[in-house]
Image (cartoon, rainbow, N blue to C red; front, side):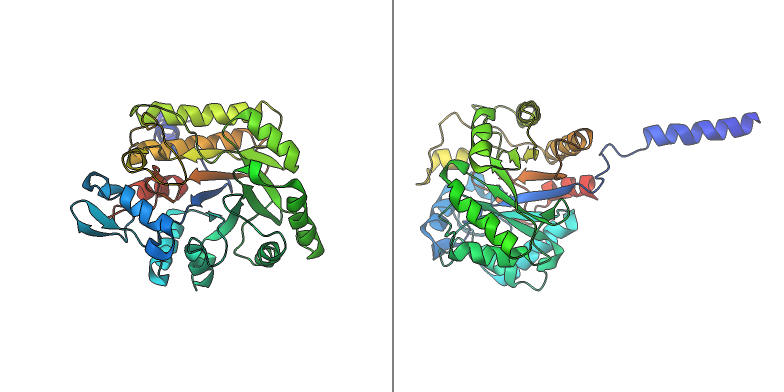
Length: 347
């Protein structure tokens, strides 16, 4: 073999090492993002509360792209039109997200508006969806029948060769016998049995609820950790990865979660009625790159732990938790920096 050929082989090999992208291959891993859709203005009292939380000018940077600044310290954040939801679908699809996990809100509550607009969109097949039960009352007679009909549709997210994906949070409010109704309805409709994932904040609670509800896997809504503006990195990524390992150590199946932020300052300054945030319970914003790296770590962990992550999916907190601190949806001024960083990982 000539020295020239050896040199060329060395150059190619070096490039394979040094020029390879730092992100892992997805290998079919589904990536979802949580939707919490209180951005409806006066359609529900919660809509006005979150606008008040983001009202101070210092928080306008994190308001959704469809917001309108009313004054220096007042803002409207109302994503309740078909055009806005269609734009969200385009953003999410272009970034490589596979599905949204919609927090459940009953029909005609106002908080179901985004879900209804998504389902009415002619672009809905560009990103799939699934449900997070437990966030609000769910009628296991009427609502369950409606949901099973949605299971039949191609835009409902399935895992493991056809099982409809269903998250439950907070799982303690869910009755095992009622959840069994959903399973039975699904079986009667000749659909795969729902793949139930309980979401909790601790290993102990997750195991207890997984046993109670006969869940298939465990996950978390968010890594609720950090104080007094600690930096996103390494606080949040470390908490996420330790959480995955802790859940795995139980021998249960896991859906890894990716916390994109926990800067709750808007809710500390302007509290909302449905929850209380400790005055020191917040973490500084992460950079787009740090958030993307956290997603990349979750994808690597999924690949290494294929038997544990049997559903081959990762769930991000969140698409649009703007006032609570977790979002990747574009923000005011069409700031797509977080979504662009994630796109580099996913595409």
